[in-house]
Image (cartoon, rainbow over all chains, first blue to last red):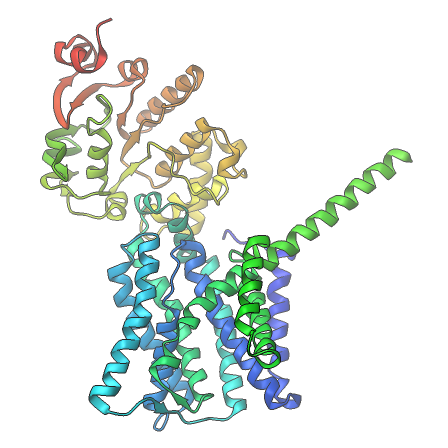
Length: 322
Length: 239
């Protein structure tokens, strides 16, 4: 309908699809280290894409990602001895979806920073409940998780990246995606032109939570042992936000590039200089926010535009001389 | 039977009665003017009718259906469109997409093909066709206000609430806006408009309701209102 093929814009989808297909062959020649790193990158990509899918257009900044990833962790923790990996992912996703739908229905009536604060507290709340459960009820700290093998985890992450990409693109072009954007632009106007704003927000938030829950379930199988502290980790809440800011929030490629650069940076910093890793990381983040408010993709576009402008200017003077 | 009939509607913010026991009704095909000093409760009354805020007491009935208690999106789909005092457009979208949003979501199950047909019609109708690919912040204020109206029209309303669409416009733009309002009415849409531009209100309204401190103090034809002692005292001033 509204859609026309546009080479400059659509070539990015083709490139991303090609990269995903290329990744499918990595286990044939990659080392275990490469596979683990790639799995982490892919998990970050799913997290940042699904986060930006909801928070990008609506402007509702969620810090609840840690809760959804953590629920995925625990879905695997409770069920990995009896269920296959795809089922664990489904359960992790559905539990996250349900939690997001419930808290969304209550809190998405809150606007702006109040929503952010609530989601921030949600992670701590779920962690506290889980800790209480382990101390008071089962009297055992943490859970062991079955390992399905590095290759399996890798492919599971790859499948989730593919699914997330499809979901993001389909939503972006759908009526639902337009409704999300409308809410972000002006929620009052959106509700008065017939958009069911509450339902749209809750559903969008829950879909993004589902995707985070699934990768959480896979991640847990790579860790052998999980506990509330490592599962409901505030870092998982901040990561998607930082990665999107780093890569460029309102673009398709931004969250992907941000996540990849971030994961590689993190791995290298942790292994090369573990003592000052956080300091350097923080400094890079501050610099990124100060000097690249539109992210890596934004900087790239600025450079390209400048080169183009420079060329056309030059072309102009050449013509004048001739 | 009136198209919209609101009886005894009240709304208080804290201890302040923004709207108290107001009865207001509009007949099909009418242009009803809503005037009063700043803070009289005009916009609050719009917010109550369109469902943006819930009334404390009273009922509003639109075409035989009770709309008090409904959500804005439901009221919109029943056929009440509105514009906002401070233009609330979708600034990140081009003009035509703003209108498309109204067309797509205004009625349930609207097809995409139908929606883009409505966009063309409406942009033509309000004279924004030349600006259709511009971004909202690149077009002048008068056009932004027109776009508000266009987006509301795209939802195919039967009743349109216009909140100060002429505020901040120069005299010739006010003239164009008046033409547009009359044209909308002639196309079969009933209108309630809040306005401070007296020249416009007196000229195009069939009936006027005056609010003061949240209460209705007068109602009648433009000439009656212009001659009404109380209205002159609280709002119009001696001339």
